[in-house]
Amino acid sequence: MNGKRAYWKLLMASAGVGLLITNCTIKSATDAGTAGSGDGACTVGSRHAGCTCTGNVIGAQTCLADGTYGACVCATDTGGTGGTSSVGGTSSTGGSAMVGAAGEPVTTFGGAGGYAGSIAVAGSGGPGGVAATACDTGLKSDDCYDCLSKLCAAQWDACAADNETTVAQPGDPYCLSQGMSADPGQIELILNCVANERAKGLVKRDVVRACGATTGDSADPQYFLWAPEDMTPATKDLMNCMADAPSTAPADAGAWANDPNNFPEDGGALAPWPACTCAKISCTGPQ
Image 1 (spheres, rainbow, N blue to C red):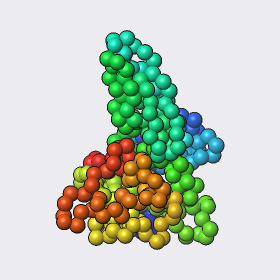
Image 2: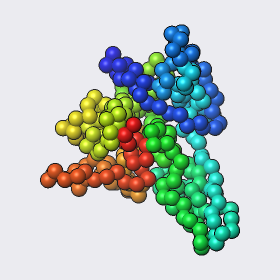
Image 3: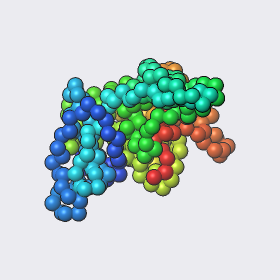
């Protein structure tokens, strides 16, 4: 238990979720103060889970430069509408983003639009115009939590519902903690392990798999069995959504870790992360 709390403290110091999401009710942090004042200020960039969003959904806050927690980040944001595209030098209004099932590609026209559990892909710029950039989601490259809550919305919601308040027995594993006093969930431990490696540079498949196989205990590629027996289904599904190609069928979920073509035995280069996945966009790049 103490070991998990140590990971939690490390996570709070390294993970950052700073995207402002609407429809949230901000919950005051108990340790907010002025940075450097020694009066209980939070650590700049640390993440605080437990603020309440619309519909009693639990969100998270990030410690700002002044030592206080910022706006509540909720997992239910639905993005915005499409932009405009140039057609033969004449401006024309783009369409709204089309919303589909979580993880399924959605085409927007006249620019990348908002999304709800979907991925904005290249749109049509029209004759003489410029096509929208593929995977132009507007997500930050250093905010894995925000990416997961949007591109893997269904899996994220299931993970958030798998918390310390819903376990069958005290001490049972769960996906995501919902309070400051709780031990970190499995996804938090895993992503903290990945974040520590990101500080050293790009994180590849074997390291992410090791962090998952050990539930955050080690990034050593010698640990490769996916998924570990004690991992909850919600944690596994969210990890698979993070790493697998968007078009991956449910029966093939987990291929990112178990397909030998992704891990050449001859010592060749590991397969790159698929485009439009959170692993590629926000979760493994160097920090």
